[in-house]
Image (tube, rainbow, N blue to C red; front, side, top):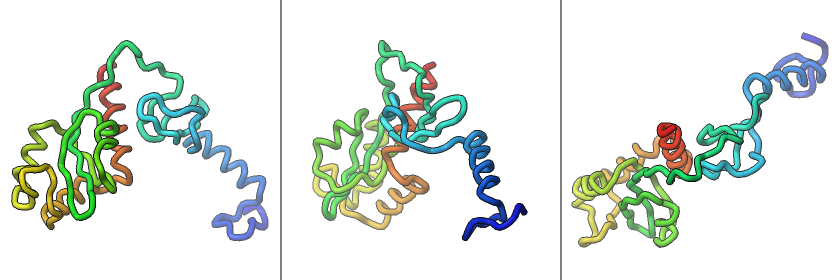
Length: 173
């Protein structure tokens, strides 16, 4: 205790000591802020500033590390779940941003790692809800439960996809 804490402070520290603790915390744990430039791996603007430099808060790519421009982007196949009106589409792509720009949809519900084989399995799994021979399905309890399981703990499906791309780049060295 170092005297009278500022109004509403949870710990009895004066302004000087509270500032010292804040500075120490930023040195020890980093400070989340906007990156100087978008992340070259995932495009996120959110970063963590540490004494050693900036890192992307989404994929943890260190700002300044060079991505080998001669190497193609890694292939990350995903099965996507999107909603439009009262329908859900289950599709697959290696470039979800490009693919979903071409489709009318109100929101991305979830991404699942997988290629056409996983997509076919999901189509078979939810065949009772399929609308004709399309890739669109009526929302059912089973389908909604599956999507909820895929998105559990994920605030934004795009962040999950960015993480998968980052991991694929890191694995190839």
